[in-house]
Length: 61
Image 1: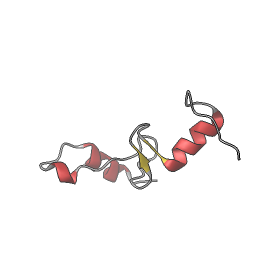
Image 2: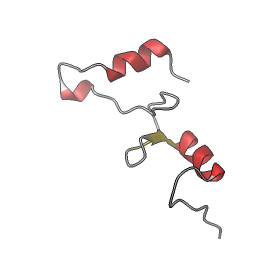
Image 3: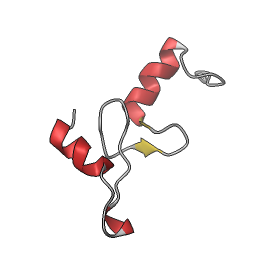
């Protein structure tokens, strides 16, 4: 879980576009971010397993 100050800093408009970081809106995680869902991989998996993401099914091999 990211610190509150780190999340607040990333939401703020930056002077340069390269300073912008994508963060998960639930936990604030920076790595493993999925742009299409605005979630990190961990939160994506939790929500998908609970059935809270429409159109997402668990694949089985």
